[in-house]
Image (cartoon, rainbow, N blue to C red; front, top):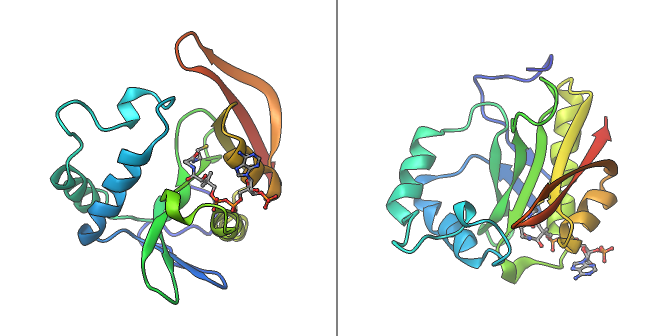
Length: 178
Ligand SMILES: CC(C)(COP(=O)(O)OP(=O)(O)OC[C@H]1O[C@@H](n2cnc3c(N)ncnc32)[C@H](O)[C@@H]1OP(=O)(O)O)[C@@H](O)C(=O)NCCC(=O)NCCS
């Protein structure tokens, strides 16, 4: 953990339009909707399976057991309408060096194209910088134009490193110095 981050306290971040804060169990339905909306090119372990898993109950349990300490993947709530529209935060994917987590974000489709992901990601970057992180990573499918654009808008640069999967295609690896 980089200096300044507080492992025992959940982060709550605020922007002009958004509040980023820990997930509540009652919001498992929003997570399931995101799972159900995922692009068919996303590998199956990130999509609803033939048995309908993860179910809402599975996701409720996951929220309960992953009660956010430090930043994690925070729920993105709109301040005016108070609805949760997706997540944004940092994950320790193990791809980057220790202390250099990955930025991740996803929104329900009906909220795309309004600048929310860029706004949320900027807040997470500010938090990371003020918490002592020096560099972040991000991974993105080469076909994911919207995500690549968000990453570019918040200052990530694509490296020459790529992960090529024979079935699912190419994952690009981007980085951002803070
Ligand atoms: C990626 C995602 C979070 C973006 O959310 P968003 O709130 O719509 O993003 P923003 O509105 O902040 O910015 C999107 C940018 O991409 C651009 N964009 C979107 N689709 C595009 C396309 N098909 N071609 C070119 N540009 C595109 C938008 O024009 C905008 O750029 P601009 O501000 O320069 O016009 C959303 O598409 C999503 O949830 N996708 C599925 C999950 C995902 O891919 N997560 C990231 C995994 S790495």
